[in-house]
Length: 296
Image (cartoon, rainbow, N blue to C red; front, side):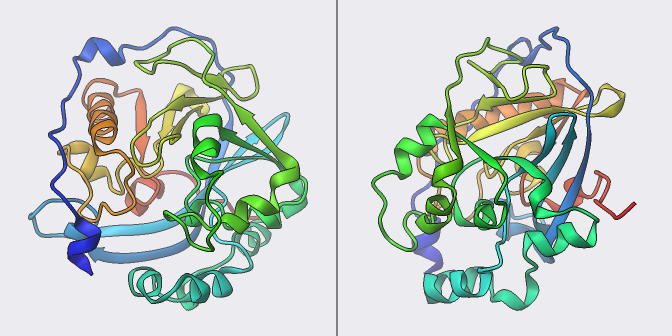
């Protein structure tokens, strides 16, 4: 099973010149943001990145809450109330890799413990459509769901319960509230295009293809002028960005050539842009640098 998940060797990662990620001067509203952890664990480092160095990986599944004047926005609403059924219906391979529901907490439960109501969420944005980034879409009834056109085009033919890492019923629950966007905004910070979610620079979507065809990163301008780059599953760990290196398990990476370029781009940010904090979606240590959402 492990051999099947690892599959063929990936192409080499090419790191672009520092000038490629040179800062684009732009105005941006600063916003508060915090992290909503739904699962944490300590795992061997090699499980998160193709690297033989010893050590552990602070694994996490989490969502990011962005407090904008236009309304509360959630990046990657992860586990839904249906998490137990989702896992058991997905099959034994998924259960072997992910474990069961006992170590996982639905997003809405974590939100409520932090003093947030599911109905407070006005926007949900997706780095990509895999099940562990979309599971709570159906639990956020007031949220407008934003997804890149390339991602929605990719998942549209899927019909199975668990298809290419996507649980299609998650997206169907949000169908009436779905808003599809294109990267028609200006190129910024080395990305070929952009989509400004609120029109004020606070949250800007940029293309980061490879893990899935429409994978998206979000540049969020935090307090004090720090920019956070939420990079989804381009790498699972910060070590994958620093080395740079692919994941060990690559069965759900759709385009390794494109992914190699995206990993190289993240490495260039890490090396040349101290004003940007790269945040892989499953790196608990990186995410723990953010404030944890808590009740006032």
